[in-house]
Image 1 (cartoon, rainbow, N blue to C red):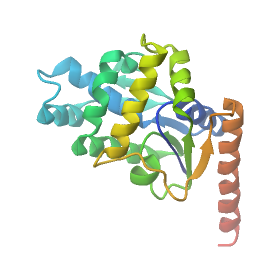
Image 2: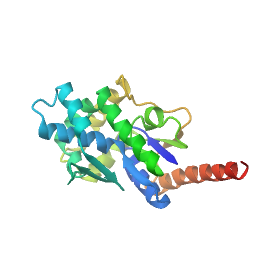
Image 3: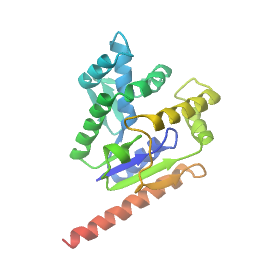
Image 4: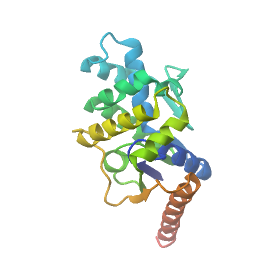
Length: 222
């Protein structure tokens, strides 16, 4: 089964996806971490991080390992550095390259072919897994998302800077030619602004469990 969780940055996708995956024994995959890994690799290894050919080459040649939220690039644990200010500044540019998105999407589909997965990230429900058995779109106000990102403590940016960055990223993500941020018509919509993480997790788990029940019934009638 593929559980695809979509939505803009800071809506709680990672926290919810991790909890749901752990609860169900599914593999958790953050597509954004793969794009960030590519940016980290590009910034670490190429002469010009704005050169499209070098970006594509790095994406195709990068050795990335993903399991239970653990991300390793070239065998090196990378999850902490993926959210550095430098990577934040470049990841949107790198992830907008169609060939880079193709590399990441292929890897995500490979992972989903091997086992049950909970995958989260922008365009997961519309481009990467349009036929996912469960699709969820999480949303929240810009104020709520900025505060959550600030409280994570993964960056030295101020709350105001984070809010401005999120607003700018939302605009870029909605305008991208490839992999634009869109809400899938058949995704379950959840506004998390006034909800606790536990409430959001229970809502998503309930959606998945209903789908599992439906699949079980269909299997019994075949």
